[in-house]
Length: 300
Image (cartoon, rainbow, N blue to C red; front, top):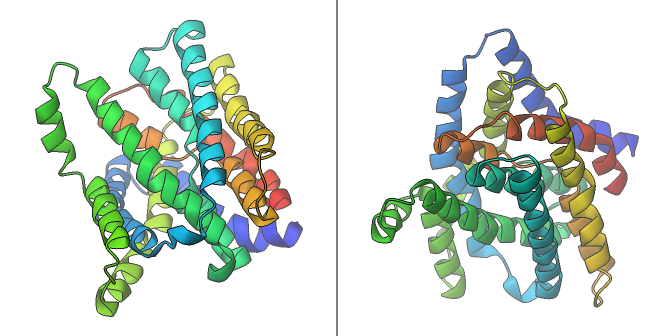
């Protein structure tokens, strides 16, 4: 466990800590980090997502396992949403994004690189499957619904055409079409995408660390509640639901590993994009990132 922690998990976590420290001493400004995050979101993440989606071998996926994981996400999301609205009196869109933070794990940019280091490309199929699920369906769902919630006065057609320009959504659609259509990505294009995409995780985590350094990490009842839900709620529900049916243990173990990961940055990014309060989302990301270090090493 100690070797996994020091050799596979901390090296990935360290880049976010570096960003946090450099942000605290004002060596890197919030504006600079926002620009880095924008570059990572618009250019680097699509380059990372496309090869994963386009080359994923859906025939080897255990879709019943992914469906059970999705059901666990839905249960925890609804529970968190109700707590946010009725107990902590959050606005609906804030509660929506806080609930997203309790189920949307930083799988693509954090857990996937860690599992890749531990298991290698050949043993990482279950994690690839859950990353494809989260990167395509879950993330796309929250991009669309958050935009609609934030722009209720704007027509659906206007929202549709604006969302159609989103590079991540476009990449997901093109990747799925290429996969289903059996279109092989030319090798020079694939090399370029891999070269560019490998920078997505470190740059995004660094920028996230800088931006989060401007937020307080003091625990309140609200922050503690949603941190606990993320740390224990999703993994427990995933464990219980995975008792249904049979599949290779590697799938159960990796889905549990992913569910135990820290909150993803995308809830925070969407909150910034739509001018929603981040005083709960940001600390939840920070605390879950720190507190999952040991649990991830143990589960891996």
